[in-house]
Length: 111
Image 1 (cartoon, one colour):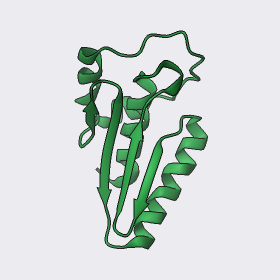
Image 2 (cartoon, one colour):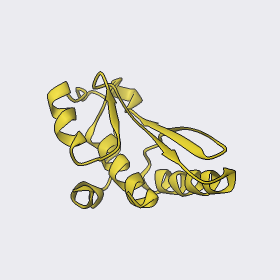
Image 3 (cartoon, helix red, strand yellow):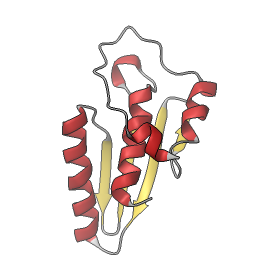
């Protein structure tokens, strides 16, 4: 369930921490429905909307969340969609923070 991990807060990454292993990342993935792993280095999901305005509204909510959590995704959006990807650049892989953000983004999307 996303509520458990979504209740956590991202912690600042200062580097020097090993990225999650494939096995550990897959464990977190079960808490973030709809998201896909790309070789345990990137977490991504595409969201669909009725029009550009809804896509933009969602992206604005994600941006506000990212500022609050101080953990920023990469976002690409256009008419009817928003593609979000997460990774912790300082460790060149995934960290628990990426899954926390994914769970919180799911809550914003209502899924």
